Length: 138
Image (tube, rainbow, N blue to C red; front, side):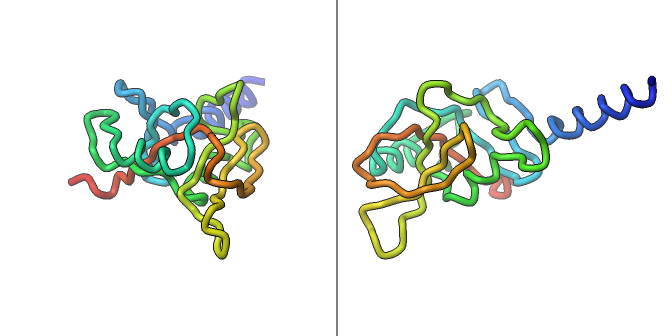
């Protein structure tokens, strides 16, 4: 029984050791080498891009709206703990910077409550989470 408890503790610790919650309301994902800023209120796509580009979360200036692959990396499909950041209960849809090819007025978004990816008109208001790469740091 002791071995089972220790193994369970080690697996749980490994899953969450990948994430580091900072004092600046950001989360660092050491596996993907991405840092995530807390989400904002819902915005239209153009304003979401501007919001991230102008963000100074954690006193850093290189924030951007994530592409759909970066957003998808927030899910751990091997464990029950699917969405790795704090999930908003009232508006689970987040913009990506990825425009739908052939239809420039649509962009991809992700639903954090069930990990589905879809596309929507850019005039809609969805939540925004900003990202930056850690590889830029010296």
